Length: 207
Image (cartoon, rainbow, N blue to C red; front, top):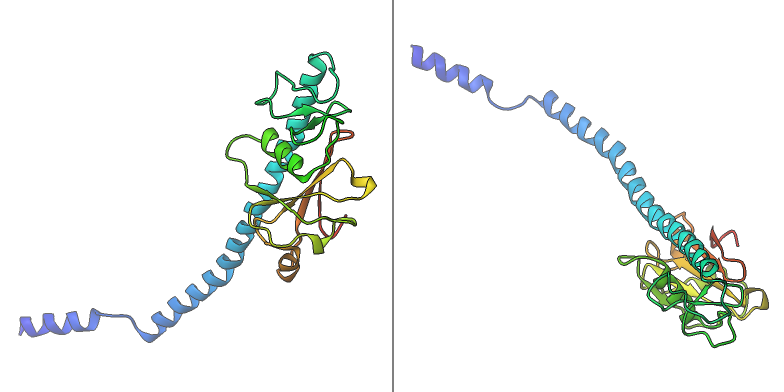
């Protein structure tokens, strides 16, 4: 009699009821609906943090280079600042950094030079960069940010107003501005103006 009673008790205590299963499913659905958007936001925030870090690094790098230039007695153009970097940067005609690719005329005039400035101003472990080999003949816009294979795409234009500027478009999240627009986002661009050392952060929709 006791054995039969124990078996009956065990049988009634096993498993979940239909109501309990429904409650669990509902809770999982609620968690998914609230956690997934938050996860996507974290992904966007991570990409934003990369851009902000590069922007801050370039701004600080230009400032330190300029300080070294002043401390070295403000030498002429195309001179390495011994107190800064690994010697791959040179002074331009205004005392701001340019790379070794540029000619002795003291101005940034090639996209490879923009890549050198980026690599030399930022520390090891920096986001990757590649030069855009296309010749941009008008103001940089969304149509120019295409086919990014690295974190950043270095762009130069042939416009007189951009003669000494470097455009660094972030393509780490979207390989092109068109994909960014499709995702309801923009393609951040960092602009380095070597005539005055300014570093500006903008996006492809607000140039």
